[in-house]
Amino acid sequence: MSTTGSGTPGPVGTEPASTKSASTEPASTEPATVISDDEAARRWRLVLGRYAADQLSVGQQDAGLERSLRYLYDREYTSRGHRVGQGGDDSGRPGRGAGLGGSQPHGVDVTALGWLNEAGSLFPRETFERMQVDAVSRYGLTELLQDETALETLEPSRELAVAMLQVRGALDDRAAAGLRRVIQRVVEDIVKRLRTRFTTAVNGRIDRSRRSMHRVARNFDWKRTLRANLGRVDADGRMTVQDVRFSSRARRTLTWDVILLVDQSGSMAPSLLYSAVCAGILSGLPGINVQLYLFDTSVVDMSHVADDPVTVLMTAQLGGGTDIARAVRHAEQQVRNPSRTVVALVSDFYEGGSVSSLLSTVRRMASSGVTMLGLAALDEAAEPVYDQGTARHLAECGMEVAALTPERFAEWLGEVLS
Image (cartoon, rainbow, N blue to C red; front, side, top):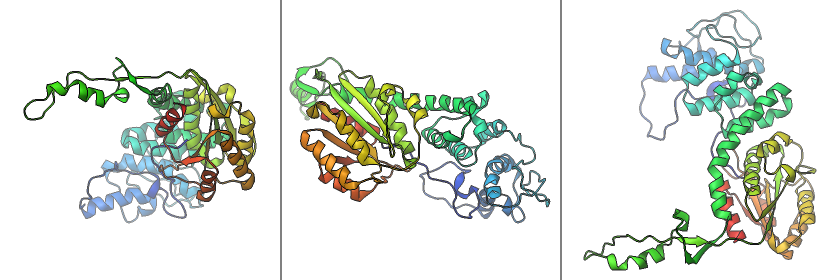
């Protein structure tokens, strides 16, 4: 499923570790303002880290920021073979001793929980969430998942959940249990946001012939409202609206089969998260039979746990190749009533199998009456990332291809099922 939100990977190449990994100032959309040389030097010192200590000092007011950044991002330097000086003080000037041990700046509780508590109190929430992602996905601070207090301190976010899913295979049982708790909190937040959209969109189409007393914006009937208040127009042409009309929604009486095919290759973690949530919501709606399949070069039937997004996510195996043709052929074998079947393929469309086989299967299913949608993957910046050539060929064969947020997917599905 397509995603919302933003966030980009951290530093690459040989740049100082903290140049892109964390911001020390909250993001702003206001016009840039001129800053003094002292303020510019202060910011650059925090960005560049300890390698700028000989030229730029850290003010007392920034000592906490410097300590938290050093604890996390000095790991980038050591991973690239840089030697970490021993000692140091709150001025940020390292000692001259050599060593390759873990970063342990003076004055900081060097446990992950100590760092987490300090960083959470010093940085804006958006920056803190980004640092959590880096801590887990880049620097292996999985002890955050092993401490009850740390779990409560973590700020659950989609980005953190995605990062954790990508490193899940390297976690021990205790850390995996902590991961499940974090995923549960993230899933609950997403479900709370999306459930109403899916329920409203999918439960039935608007029936303009019947008036409803259920006053929701989606059912607002502006034409009948205008007609009902035409007698309340004053001499200046202004209408006083006293009678607001709403339309009923027609209930569906026939069952639809919705088959979700979700690519679980390594780049699909954000889409997998939302796909699992959408499958869980749809499973709880009347008149819809949900079949959920995860695939890479093989196809795994997750239909029996489709109503439990957390179990789906904890079971998924991110990584490996991609054989979309095989997954689509498997879906074809599950079709019982083509005219009442929707197949939604969530993928980046980079086919590792036979493209010709994929296209022939899609063409055959579309000809039989199956409604098909290809949901293109989006990256962390919510930009479409997919093989446009394969997507174009799929569209030519009868599959509607789009990059949709989960909300728009709910609306599209509601239109199809009506």
